[in-house]
Length: 124
Image (cartoon, rainbow, N blue to C red; front, side, top):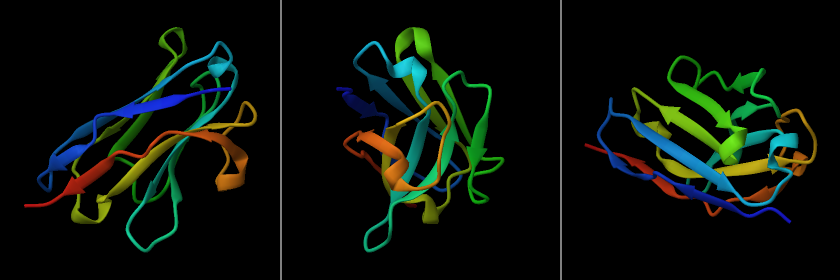
């Protein structure tokens, strides 16, 4: 059983930055990939960024490339999502999730544990 606790959401102006953190319980966290998803009201939950078990491989959606950075610290059982140059359309609930294996995947079914989804609101 893995529990994920996220922090770092909030209100930010367009062009601003936020850093989301995802802290995991358990001693198997470092074996599995992690994904950051987001879900806006009335829309599907979609992968924004993924990182494999070691941090050597990462993935970003086109909208996140060049602006977001996913990283992990397995010694601290934590994964982070740095977000820069935030846009209005980045407004959503953001969820971290641990995968069922060592590499990230794009589908929700690839992940078995989820955080609570703190809100990120980009507004002027």
